[in-house]
Amino acid sequence: MQSLMISCLASLISVFFIQFTLFVLALFLPTSSFFTLLPLTALLIVILVGLGRCCKRLVGVKACAPAFVFLSILFLWVVYFSVIRRVTSYLMDIVFNIEIVMLIVGLYRIMLSDPGFVRCDSSYHEMPVRSPLNEDEAHIEELEPSTHPTQQESHAEEGLIVRRGRYCKYCDAYVNGFDHHCPAFGNCIGEKNHFFFVLLLIGFVISEASYVACASQFAARFQTIDEVKRVTSASRSLAISTMLFSLFQVLWQVVFIMWHVYCACFNIKTDEWINWKTYPEFQVQIISDAGLPQTDLQFKNPYDKGILRNLKEFLTAKG
Image (cartoon, rainbow, N blue to C red; front, side, top):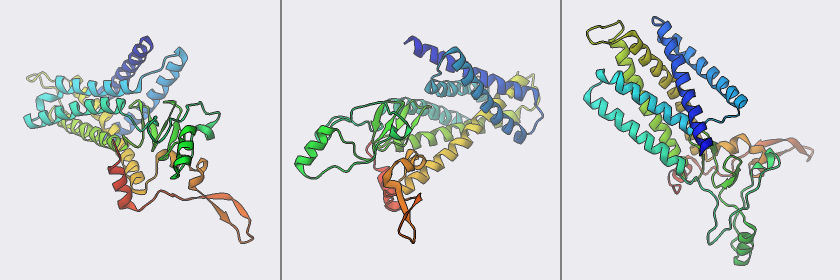
């Protein structure tokens, strides 16, 4: 419990440090164009994240990535209520707050969701968990269950894994339909929560895009200090800095969503795409004219059933 509190505290410090740095950037470059500030924001975030990791390693502290995500959402929500809300319409205010609440609920749900951990049931026995000796042994091949009762019982006793089960070193368990381990959500993404993971990413994009729209409206309305409405340059800089942070998140999240849609269309997992040379079912040896196998391997996806069937399988996966 104490280590968890320390990790959450480290995440809190990281959030405020990043947001403060972006605020200073917007405060000291008030006349800079938006297209100038956005690349600087991306560069600063990358540098700060890298420095933060180095500092945490030096002091022996690990940050909690899900806490960082939650605190970032909470920070934007606080800025919205304290600064930006005054210029938003009543309808937009209701919509944005509902989006944030749903986002927090979705984050909580995916953190506790079962991605498809291999467990004991009537047909198959749980695979004994072990630490891989090397990177190649960090995964296992798909094994087809036997249709013969005697063989099936024997396989159950040996603990065979079905449905493209792979080993996750972070969760120290095997996951059916393993795509990747998501540090931001603190859980594996597998057969049972992959579709919900994509939905949650879309929710993040919609919420952050809504925040960008509200913050840009605030910044455009108060380009100069307005004493009557008590709007200071600091408030405008805070709106701009959080808007840039949210837009940066939207850009990489959209790319990430497009990648997962591509994977769903062709029935391929991120882990399989990266490490396909460690999985024999994805390997095809090229035979030369002389009849001798070449050293190069060709990629072939044995799970591709056509885009429509692949999408149907992805959408109807048991959650």
